[in-house]
Length: 339
Image 1 (cartoon, one colour):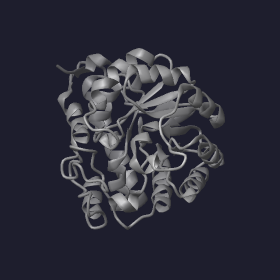
Image 2 (spheres, helix red, strand yellow):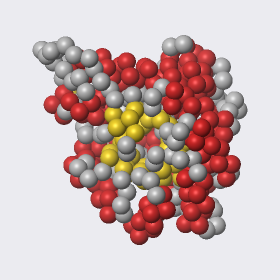
Image 3 (cartoon, helix red, strand yellow):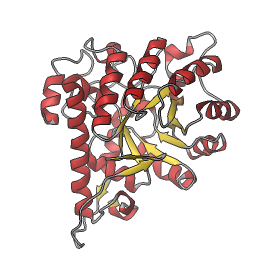
Image 4 (spheres, helix red, strand yellow):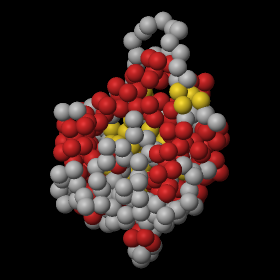
């Protein structure tokens, strides 16, 4: 099964909001929430995608022919590609009735593990979502990253204990989910976290802690102050705040601010191995993709996930060859062009 077949199959199983578009650029779903769209005008997800397309590749084939290695190491674990599946929640609400969150996470974790990469799993108000995600990660030897939403501190402690039972090599929090309306209506409400609260959360984790939802150098420095070991440059796919810049626009300044001190991942509109190459050239250590992996699961379950991972990998390898980069470490800012 190739990814075009996956997309075709997904169209029979997904919707009504997501259309399993051939190019997942945020236009067809624009501001559909429920659904995979962005908040307000719906333009942030579109901008995320378009800003990667504005960056060009500097080709250079005057080089020795060598095998290409796309392998990376993150927190002591090796991965075949610098690509991770992003966390997604409430899939039945936003993408269709075929899967529950529990079923989706189980398929995603296993498919990613079989492909030599790893999945960030989603969270939800139902405790079983985290419980089952933790079990799925444990079955794969801890090769997954449970992602906790920014609940109140007591709930975070409970979720953290569930996450740690997975044996995961890292734990994450999508702190940008503070902008999701259903979290703000809890009592006590979920929401933003202070540096001091983050310090406490980092200690709870007892494994490397990744903070997703960083969009400014100042936020990255505060995460570093809190002891966070990795960040994800992310605007939550435009779903939590309208009129945000694209992740490609802010990534370089964040890398300049903290790139020597912590791992930096990026998401937002990354759809091909060429986009992955561009993100790495801007200084990211790896990337996340979320919506494409939903299409992969709905269109082919674990086989669909593997098809998407191989698509990312093949496109990345081809781009690296054409730029004279034969390992991830050799990808540099000089290999891309932007105005």
